[in-house]
Length: 398
Ligand SMILES: Cc1cc2nc3c(=O)[nH]c(=O)nc-3n(C[C@H](O)[C@H](O)[C@H](O)COP(=O)(O)OP(=O)(O)OC[C@H]3O[C@@H](n4cnc5c(N)ncnc54)[C@H](O)[C@@H]3O)c2cc1C
Image 1 (spheres, rainbow, N blue to C red):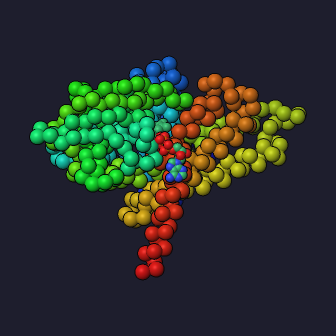
Image 2: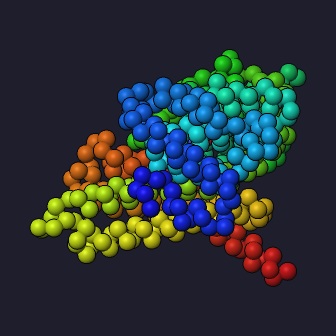
């Protein structure tokens, strides 16, 4: 296997994939490698500048064509296996490229799946050509894992709705032109009383409350909605369907978080291998030491398992297995936890050179951390997996 590839070519040859996926993997791999110098330059820009530029560049290269598909081929470029392959390659190359791709795809997906023809026509062409950046706003400071507890209110009036409240930790929050906001409308209690709204960022009353700087820099913000009036046709799907829309989205994207984790981890493992093969030690090289070999082997086993679980989840989803959300959670949980361990082991093998600010191991160490938190923490994944097991058991017993 060539060390500059973001994929394990033997996994790509498995029957889970067809030729279109293999071609996509080759093309996105080439696209990323052609930009090796650019990835170094990304850190000279602000995360906001980089985010806006990368969304445009990904769009111009056709990587968002599935957001406004003109053919079956365009639509197929957004199947689960393709999304996972894209994230794996982009994460291998550069965190911010993966972030730009994933948040734009994540924000457009509720529209693709639940939008009216009119809403799709209004927003999706801009999202596909990169002129309109999206953000998906569910979390609040007091409501993260417990989505059903969110309090941002949308009061119904004759003209539409009036939004009041705050959202927290929103990816692309400081650069988005369109927010998909989950708000409490009160059709029922808890999760039954939530509705999704499409809110252009320039709507009076909507604003960035505060930009937040996470350990891996990116556009990230708290948002405020103060007497923010939106028309009836800002509702996405039906009133009261907001919780289902949010969960449907997260179930779909969790496996892609696992794919990004595999990309970061493979980069760390490749870098560690290259380092220990050349680092002189005790008259030989670090790789001659048995404990170093054991660490490399451990990384390889974990990478294989993570990669295969992500591949399986994507394949289950693409073939229409209704139990795919459980596989999506399994893939996210295992791949993100394993990637954290692999990257930590890589830092260890680099020794002091691995903790130098902005060195590759140090960057990966910061970049991987939030994947175990967003789109459902590892603990939430455990609960989801156990819940699905219980439901399967109950169904088999009937
Ligand atoms: C980089 C990043 C990007 C993000 N992007 C977005 C975004 O674009 N849009 C958005 O809406 N949100 C976003 N978030 C927010 C993210 O979804 C939340 O951080 C996440 O849901 C966890 O919520 P919380 O931070 O409030 O933690 P909490 O829910 O308060 O959890 C704190 C701890 O308690 C544990 N815990 C919670 N419930 C249980 C339970 N039932 N059993 C056992 N343990 C439990 C958690 O696992 C965690 O360890 C982002 C977060 C990060 C870090």
